[in-house]
Image 1 (cartoon, rainbow, N blue to C red):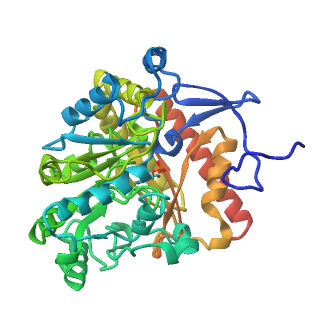
Image 2: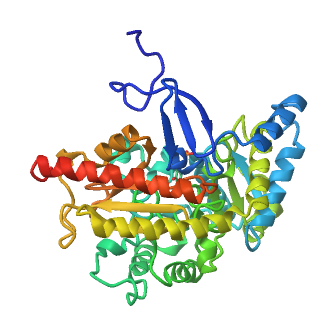
Length: 449
Ligand code: PMP
């Protein structure tokens, strides 16, 4: 076999080559068909090969693909920023365009720090985050990420450590019930702020539903209302990392809208262009921009490809498509159907401990014993076995972390394109049930492993 030249996720594994995509399906070069039940990395939310998007990209390419942002703006980038302001709540009226979720988080961090600098409070620089979180792979975003496996090699370079527990209702560290806990886990934010001193803290960052680091951890009633209140009382900005949850994934443009909570800064990515081009954004409220407008007049961030017209045109076309086809509502509705079917499956199987999430962002956590919630041993490699078995059955699902230490458990995310049809949803559940039955049979054969 010819040697590899491309560095892929695992050097010792071989990867199928994709041939093409159509709707919720991908096809490899051997002709095998896969249902893309995770939208790649929870990205491809309108499915593959949508002609309107391809047309819009072609038109933009014919006009101009690239300009440098300090020389020219473009109708595509201006239109996209305006559209984002229109579809998001409150005064989130400013957009800084970048190319990945990690960059959106880095820009959010810098904007929060700058907001206080412009008001002569340069000591407010620390950003508090939670364990079981993923905010990106660049060093700033990684330092906020409560993801031990991704952190440990670079620990010495990381600026800060996450301090606050996530809302992990299935394994509540306080042993409480989400219906009556009064979001006790938010107390930890207040404790963390008091320990460091609010005068040193710029912001708190959280994923509304924890994605890859927790398999759709969903907060208890009142959680974000309390978080917002704590941030306000201590004069700390609230950054919502909506890179995974944003743009319809949970049934609303921003997941924060479910609780009527308005963040000061929002990071978007993934679904913004549904995978048609690399683009992401940091949305900033009027309130946060005001001192920057009155002060240095620039946010000290940006990349060569920031606000490039080609990606902006793709994203704008995707946002129009989502609106025209009411895909936020579709996500909410289809999410309910899928949730019910997966909960039914949970009852029939011995290894599904929890099914959680909102809209078409559903997490499934696996346990050896539903009563004790004991995770499988690491040696069992259950998550990767499920991913591989599903792939063999023509179904793509996404690996996620779970468990008490946020890495000692097994979980996956199911997050199909918001365009998935009823029949395709049924097929998804059929393929997933088949996969789980086969894995259960293997576990029985291997005496629990
Ligand atoms: N934040 C969240 C919540 C994410 O899920 C991700 C990607 N999985 C990122 C940030 C980083 O985005 P990117 O991979 O585009 O840099």
